[in-house]
Image 1 (cartoon, rainbow, N blue to C red):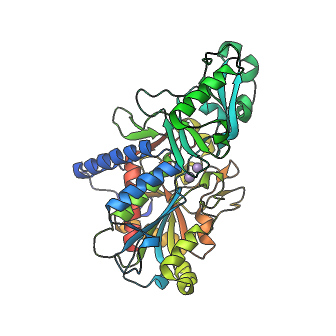
Image 2 (cartoon, rainbow, N blue to C red):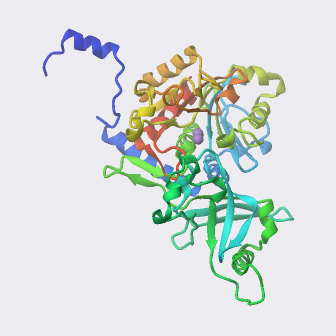
Image 3 (cartoon, rainbow, N blue to C red):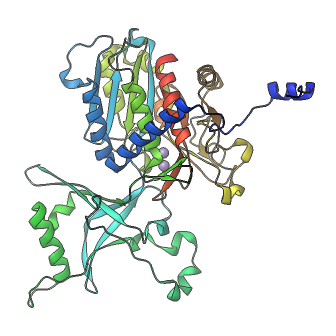
Length: 468
Ligand code: MN
Ligand code: MN
């Protein structure tokens, strides 16, 4: 090889290298990436709502010897406990050797994703169709949710409090649902509308049936047939919807993308591509010598609608859990000495829309875990903006462990923005930094990530829980 010029040697030592991390990957790591991706795709298909994802996670926890905190009694180093918060959020912990007043290493992700929720009175008949009226959940481009197969997930609670779980559209021979769109031949007016109005929120009505109940005398025959099937199968009636939580999500499964199978397309990468690696990083500590500091994984709900509600990060659920570990007296010291990675996805540069990204400060797919110092919008408004000291500490930790990472912000200044659960943790004085997987087509029914970034997240989260 030709000898490097002095300038090249200097450049190599002073410039940041933003390498595609697939380059030079060894076959052992390649196998691990593939196996991790396989398990991730499996839980993504299993857990399309926060209830389903947290239930699947609880199964993994139980297998690894985690016990419900309410039944666990006095805790000591190495013990592992969890709380399934109202069946929708999850807090799990491995107790460390050091006292809790020295703080906890926390990974905080969210497990809710944008989707279409049914209204309390959703069912109506129009032009011999049974239709279900929805209210979308989270920020979506509404037109993206038409003309795709949708599955119906959720729970009905009967007057006795008994839960009826529903999942229709996931099995090969299940029927699916869809939202129709106007044919292009007659869409001249529609095509002139702004993107936000092409399909309006009130028009996101799910096509659910078209066959009438066989009785001349009765009204709303198609609606009646739909309800009669629901009644036969689940014992439900029209009033069951008024208390239910029924969600429509894409009916397709997560799939490999590209001839090289380097990427995964699927519903809900935001934020399960961070939630799953975070959970796995915690599971890895189970059954081994207790970590120095207590390690905690928080899978929260409601992030996509602002984290409000008693299963969201703005509630006291997290604090109550920590108080149960530390006792009220030590709670404040424990929290203010804690550190957290707010494990949430980042926007990857979209090749066709590169103009809205500041390329020097954006995240790229295939370049590792993204550290986002601040989110917010319009002058960093509502951002937590991590401290330089903590950013440097996390960066050094990842670099030392050879975890590929990059730094990224969300788009050009004044072109948009967003938020995560970071600022809810920051309220306690917790050192917190956003840190997650770069995603293409975020908040669409079929988001895209790179397998190698997913694996980098798992590695990075593991290092953080053990090491910081
Ligand atoms: Mn998110
Ligand atoms: Mn989101």
